[in-house]
Structure formats: C-alpha cells, structure tokens
Image (cartoon, rainbow, N blue to C red; front, side):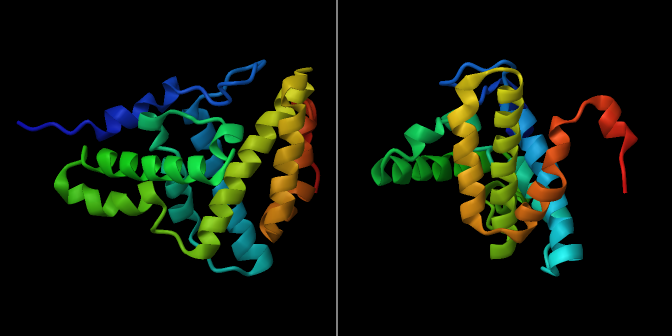
Length: 198
C-alpha cells in the first residue's frame, strides 16, 4: 500500500529554529510561528470584517497561515537580512520556495493535491487576504522581537525597529488597529491580562 508523508513532513516544522543567526533568550520554532501567525491572521480578518468593512474569509486565511512557511521545511529558514540582501538572492530564494511547495504537494495523495495547493502556495487568497496574512506574519515577528527585548536581549533591538517600520510601510488599517488596541497588552503581566477592561 502506498503511503504519503506530507503530514509527517509538515510536523517537522517543530524542529526548524527561526532567527538562526541571532541569540534568542527563548528559541522560536517554525511551528510556533505559524500557529501564532494563523491566530493573528484570523484576528486581522475579523477586524477587516467588523471594523474596516473589508470582505475576507477569516477561516481560509487562518488555514493558509498555517502553511505559509511550509516550504521552509525543505529550504530552511533563511535570515531576513540574507534573503533581502539583493534582488538576485531574493528571486532565487523565491524560486526555491516554489519548487519546495511543488515537491511537498507531491507527497500528498493525488486527490488532495489540488485542494491543498492553494493553501501551501497562498494562491487561494484574494489580494486583501494576502495583505492581511503578510501583516500577521510581520506582527508575529514584531511580537517575538518585543518579547526578546523585554527579556533584556538587545540582540533583537534593531529587528524590533525594522519590524515596526515594515508594518507602518504596509499602510494596513487592520494592523494599525491591532497595534493600537491589542499589541500593548503583550507587555502586561498575567494578572493584568486576566483582569481585562472594556
């Protein structure tokens, strides 16, 4: 009987460490990042629906977020300064990610390849949904930088400013809403978080 290793391979995201060129107070895995990005993407989509009036599909975007870095299982996590060092490197890495996605989809039963393809490649998303997923990805990185700096790790200070700048440059009202009303809570302690306020 033929077996299909797609899910077993995806489960290996927990072994891939992010921020590999930087000392981290607490290492972050690709699994952690994708889970947080999915939660953030879902939240941004709800903000889009309920606050800015943008028609999006929160559940579809959340599932796409779970797979948005899946090609890195085969390519590894390339550090941002290297990935964006110049256009040639960025273009080559994008092509490698595309090949990785195709190879991974080939590890599924044939009947599942087409339905999964849109999630692994992100092609199932509209332009507005892709923008929100990218914003969620940036927010996840920003939150990691904040946590590291709050832990006294200056290694992430420059990355923190870069992520703030990248988010501001997106001009994403949903991300701006999150930054103003939700991000400040990430510096609260547990008692403050559970007390809440209206």
